[in-house]
Length: 294
Image 1: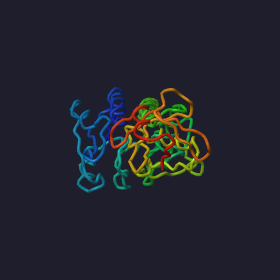
Image 2 (image 1 turned 90 degrees about the horizontal axis):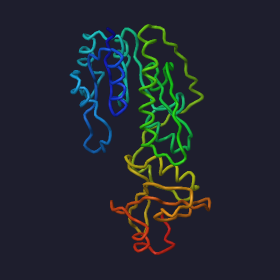
Image 3 (image 1 turned 30 degrees about the vertical axis):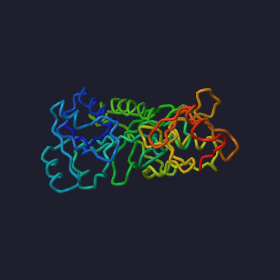
Image 4 (image 1 turned 60 degrees about the horizontal axis):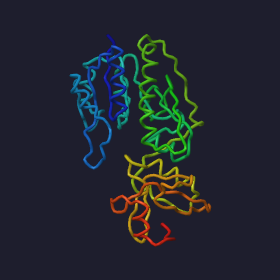
């Protein structure tokens, strides 16, 4: 039986662990993270899945520590798989598995290498993204591609909605590639790194709206950081406001309207002031007509 050590977190980790078990892979150990109490945990827990299926798991602060490496060496895995695990694995660790180490990334590599690729794709107005299974290297998201599955991004889709599709696409890519990987016959396509870009992580303050931008760019930002992410923010009459949903199309469902830097109108479909949702009537009462966000 093929044996794997799996580094995993998030819903993607759960979906891909399901694939490994269904395909008869022995998961000897799961390496995952403890949840950050400051983070909104809206996704599935890999630790819960491991407990349910009787899979040993650990949550080391540093997976590259010699004690962790020694534990994994004893297991003699054929493969490493990394599914939304948040730390880089260094060369001594990557040298352990006999048949290789593979990571699942939430974009169509080489585009959007690095952090939060789905959010970045939506913010940049992409019409498609996907999931890529690739060989792991000491540098992030640069290894040879083994499988890719594309998913569409609609003009009003939020990053959270796209994430659910990418999670399924990732599981599909893994399922497609596993037989050839196990047999040692998987094709490996070298990435053209010049055809893509690397992006860093995002912070809540990066969601602040610059109203000098055009309506399309602001709409993309709103979609890219909409809940379960922190949301796009602005200020009206010195009050902090979260814009949760928007549209470029006129609609009777709009709570409010905002004029953008290109002279076009953004229709705000959902918003909060100090954590309280506002409807159109309350908005009109609270803010005089013509008040402009900053």
